[in-house]
Amino acid sequence: MSQRRILISLAVVLALSSCNRKAEGQTVAVVNDQEITASELNAELANNQNVANAPDAKQARAAVLQRLIDRKLLVQQAQKDGLDKSPEFLNQQRRLNDELLLNMLITRQLNTSQVPSPEEIKRFEAARPETFAKRETWTLSQVIYPLPKDQAVTNKLAAAKTMPEVEQILTSSGIQFRRDTKKIDTAVFPHQIYAQIDNLKPGEPFIAPGPGQAVASVITAREPNPLTPEQARAAALNGMKREQANKLVQDRVKSLRATAKIQYQPGYEPPKK
View 1: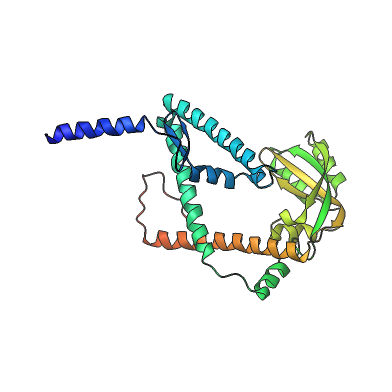
View 2 (view 1 turned 90 degrees about the vertical axis):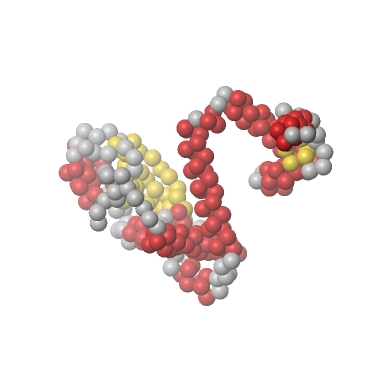
């Protein structure tokens, strides 16, 4: 038998075998000839928090499998429509692959790092009173308004010492605004921003500009929001891990840039310092 005939026969055998896949062994289901393995189902179960608390684990597993089958059907239809060949898909796929690999790189490094000592945890907590020793819930009275086009108005608002003064500046400048009230946990503030706000005089507003609008806020009430020792330790460990991950990325990027060869097309160079 010639080599060409052997290859043709082998291709036919593989094609036939792929058309007769069965839900057996490690294959828990077959969707239009596409296998769903036990490991894939287990990964879906691990990402589904409701399964762990479900009274009937078997029924919950079956429901997750049905959702996985639905997803496979939709993906297969998208592939038939050629969406997996589109530039939009390929660009997003590359980005998702980059993020997945980056997360795995960071996780591997963090898993090999040492657990912080009790002294390190205490120092971390002491440096962040907004999250630990002085954690509070603030009630904020707010004025929300579109960003002024005149820089002079922006400067006046930044210098305002009371909320009525903010409102008067907006009114005299013909800028409409609306009032609101909000409760916020001090733990959400970056430490430097918290320190600036906490040092304001009572009744003095602070302004947070955003896309297209700004929010002027003043603290009208403070309520203690302490953590239990167990909660504080967990929060500290999570915060330390985030900071460690950020430092790991910065250090690794700095090291890789030092040895990498990076070329730019004219006009795309980074801005000069």
